[in-house]
Image 1 (tube, rainbow, N blue to C red):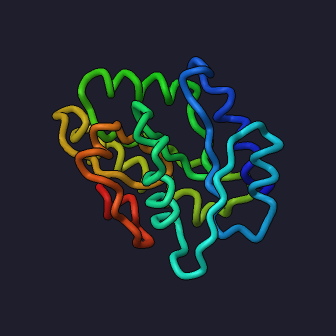
Image 2 (image 1 turned 90 degrees about the vertical axis):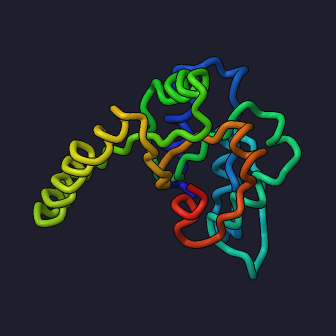
Image 3 (image 1 turned 180 degrees about the vertical axis):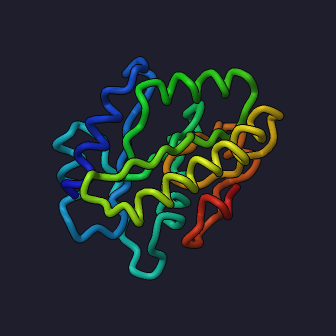
Length: 176
């Protein structure tokens, strides 16, 4: 659960009106102190226990089926080990205002100084190439980017039109 603390502090520091958003941590089948850490950080915690239906896809289905979710203008899903940019919610808000119903956050991977070069350099090169030759051109022509974990936003309209139904290990790609 301690790995979650930097992410929660990062999300609380995002440049967006605090009364317009709520941070909810889904403690899914947790055997560590995730719920306790989230509560200590002032976040709402939804605890889920289901020994048969495990994993992020099932946890998201469970959370997105809650009645209070449908009252929200949008839902943002951020992985527990992610650091978001300061303007993330403002960008999502801008794109929602432009009529987008699903928005993928751009991911920039950073490696610690201890990461060996044989892993760091190829991963950075692949990320750069994907961004330059796939993401940017698709974005320029307003083409579908897909959803791929890390961070994304779904509008209320998207969730009403296509309720969350993705349970696989690749739940983001499956839903997208």
